[in-house]
Image 1 (cartoon, rainbow, N blue to C red):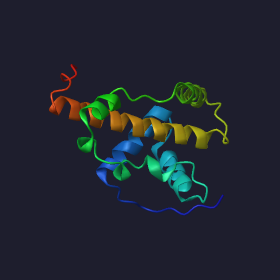
Image 2 (image 1 turned 120 degrees about the horizontal axis):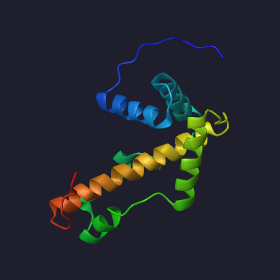
Image 3 (image 1 turned 180 degrees about the vertical axis):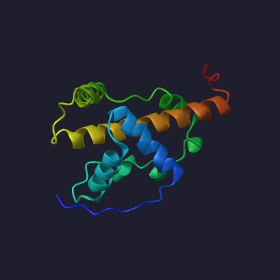
Image 4 (image 1 turned 60 degrees about the vertical axis):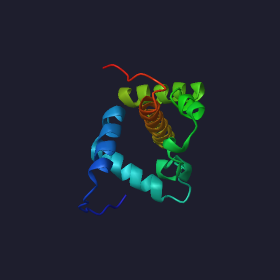
Length: 135
């Protein structure tokens, strides 16, 4: 595959998210960024636009019941198990090229759910619906 070398200035938040994802996947940051760009620009991108939290309504606009429900948000059991399996395969160095997009997609879903849960926890604490989590 041909490649072109470029220099990018990433927003700090994008860099932190990519670095965290690379660490979780035990992969080189450059490889993660290349794959993210490739996947996001592909015509059949497995990461659908609805995973963009900027398109989701703000948690502050939810009812108390909805906020509390979001504090319990978790990945579906089958997806969570598959993510663990793929991460194990990645760690062992036996993840196939065909499995990489699936791992990437599941990691994006996990990250999205974790973000929404954190937003809900913050909102629940600010409304007095829940005590702050202890470190």
